Image 1 (tube, rainbow, N blue to C red):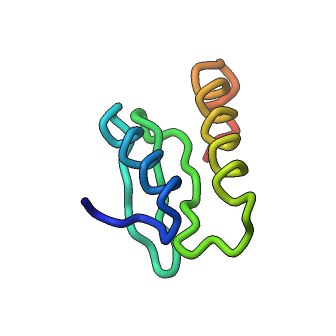
Image 2 (tube, helix red, strand yellow; image 1 turned 45 degrees about the horizontal axis):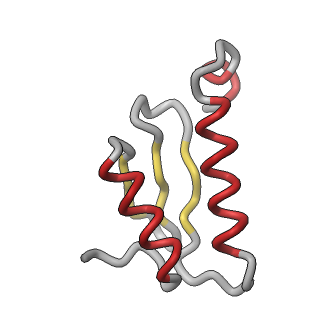
Length: 78
């Protein structure tokens, strides 16, 4: 299993999203997780230093899932 982050919980969530059609690209220090339609992306914390990093990342994924199908998401997501 490929490691996307030092956090076990973030790795599990990223693997679930990848199985659901999301895409991952490794950048310099952080990876980027793209929605299935490539209109929006999230930065994946490779070495989270905050104990709330997983909760914050999970909330960002939820927020992106809610807004990615709205008409204005294409206009402002780039």
